Length: 345
Ligand code: SF4
Ligand code: SF4
Figure 1 (cartoon, rainbow, N blue to C red):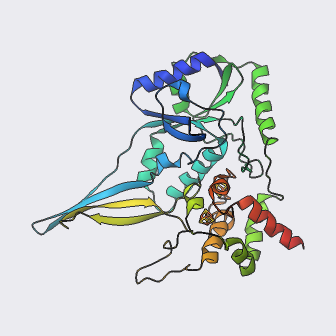
Figure 2 (spheres, rainbow, N blue to C red):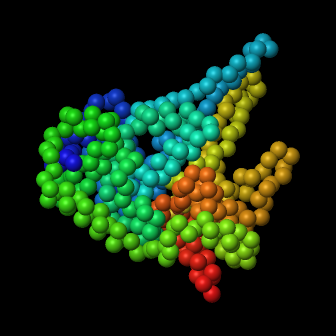
């Protein structure tokens, strides 16, 4: 573990910005919220944030991207893949978002290696930060994601007038090479452990049982349509809960033709299982045209389907869905606790 004084940290970050070989983005304050955005000065970083509107997945899997272009010329048809990879450093990722990225890494390199995601991921350096403040809708401590020992290239812990820096990879260690740092003392190492212990006590919301029980609990309640219908009664099918989630990765692919119809682009963009058209297939059939079924699908996916396939509970407890759902019905912590309570009655 290394220690870097606050001023030297600012110089380090400004040095990365000045190098111009990678885009540098970091958490900043915007209109009383926090966002990951292009960083122009280390002073703009807000590393004591609680949660950002969107997770950093937007840099690995953009909301919209053209994946190929096609052209028809004198009867010949040609296609060219398009892949723009901007080498990037992302500063200020909370542990739950780092764990979500690790889950996405598995998904995008499973049966089909998605080069659009993987090439960006390879060119990305992730600098995490241990949480100082906790969103009031987050329940990351219950999900085991309030801290992490992996998934980062560098991990920062604020120790007042200095940062402790844990090195997670050779990319991280290379990056730190030109920074003015020193070895951490045993007291400083212990202080970092204390910060990690203390953060777990800051969460107001908690899952009242082990997340390991979720797959079985959901399996037992799959057919409990009264529960799903009651909970989804006020759902607008707006898809916000999917789109803000760091572990949701579904996308739609569409061919966008030029008006001349002789060229165009194939575009992929985020999609979400709560949106009405998500499960529509050719011919117009919709496998989940019922709102309660769509609502149920999201919880099944988070707590059972992804677990069955990859061994991960696909909710890291960030609380974004809960805080951004207008009728406030998207909170997995509340829904899972209610389900558990119902079982006990
Ligand atoms: S649960 Fe909430 S955020 Fe999700 S689709 Fe329904 S209304 Fe939108
Ligand atoms: S389901 Fe909600 S709380 Fe869980 S990871 Fe997604 S946005 Fe965060």
